[in-house]
View: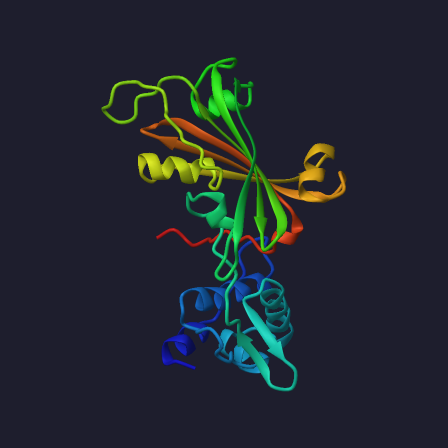
Length: 260
């Protein structure tokens, strides 16, 4: 193990108020993995060694390692030890990116299957997210995201259909050409350049419901992760998306760090 990794892991850990000690140990090792101090495929210290370095019990270390294994950051080889995973779980929704990038991964083919593009009146929920009054015209792009042949998410994206002024340009309708193979955000990025944000992604849990269950080959009562994303552009609400992600999509990460 590299000296920098040994030095980083050997610092004692303390639990935050209301958080178990195993979470602090998990965070320390996960940070070493994500920062490259523990490289993919490398062997990590034993439970006894980690416990001695971090000044915690072997039981606490074992619980943290079990969580790391569940989250795909490490893998165990019976009779040998634990190793950093060769391929780490994707970094998820901490940056503003099209959902095909969020849910895609190395060596995986992700297809965007468009189910509808329609101009309609903005609902009371959609309107403030895209900076218009309720009832104003907006665009709805609806897609199913398919990875390696399996439907993993249902995506609805909205922007205004009214003339908008972006930066110093005069107000004009957005001319969005749908090639059928990309999400609305990816299409807008290609047309306008990267949406600068800021953005916010709200996370909740729900049931998929009857109509979307058919699109995702699920039962109506099956649980889905609901990602509701709001993005500002040119300092005003601009884009709103709701993405229902099925369990078969696998891990979706949110990176966290202490503010300096």
